[in-house]
Length: 101
Length: 317
Image (cartoon, rainbow over the protein chains, first blue to last red):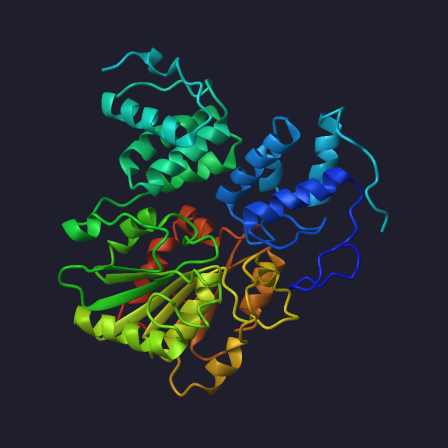
């Protein structure tokens, strides 16, 4: 996790390395019904299961217009790693830095 | 028997529509062309069938989809669970149960039962899998089942709103419901956050035993509780360890936790050394699907039998 966000509640982290990271974190948060998700989180550390992994994958596909392999989530990849994968597989994805930590 | 081309028209992205097609294929004994649409949609469609208690159709579809997508863990595990599904018990009312996820309390009486099982759902409103599936395993135990959800998302600490506005009233209502079922023996079962409720209510209701999978034992802030990020504003809960330490008579309790999931490990370790408690590590498990790990490794039935076996003392099942 970046910033000073508390793992258990508290303020949301304000540092993502890219807009893709931020959007991936938002998808995680929406599906898992959490207020925020950090770039170092993975789906299982947040209490998700394989059913929710599929729901996250479907939402990532809708959001980024790519085909997303659920295996990436099932191998407990972190938000930042998934964002890197998405950017690598979607040349049109924005690479800009949203906010430096 | 319908032809193998029965699915040539699958263009829908709607899992419920695909589920209906799968159902028809099951009824007709038709083969299914799983290459026709995305595997995740197949999974959602199979989940739809499970959620509507159409378990034979779900098994028919999952057993055929899994070999087509050998790397799709979610399809593999669903197919594996369905393949292990026990046969329905001989009680029509019990077999006829279909989960309504909007309900906080669902009572499923069982003919001739001498015990009641309180089942506590987690945040995802399930128990690591659909209640429609777990009901088949509970059918092996010969017990009444009371399924509980806390739709207030207050860790069951404020009670279950459908029963009473507070914890005390909820406990009295549960005791009355158990009395109505005509049994004295009560056991608790919980998955993930539901395990916290199971542990707490088992103590409050003086239950006989508790079985938990990947469950928190300490919901105080500062214990790594991602649960406190819940959109519904989950309130901090209690550290249950002191309650168990102080209890004159704590239920025999077994916690199963993930080997490689740091949060689960820490939460289970919080109960280490308590006299009525045994811990079991799900070896090789990376994630939170501890229940699934136990099921696929053939340990699950032994665990639930331990839960309801009146002759068992504390200790490893």
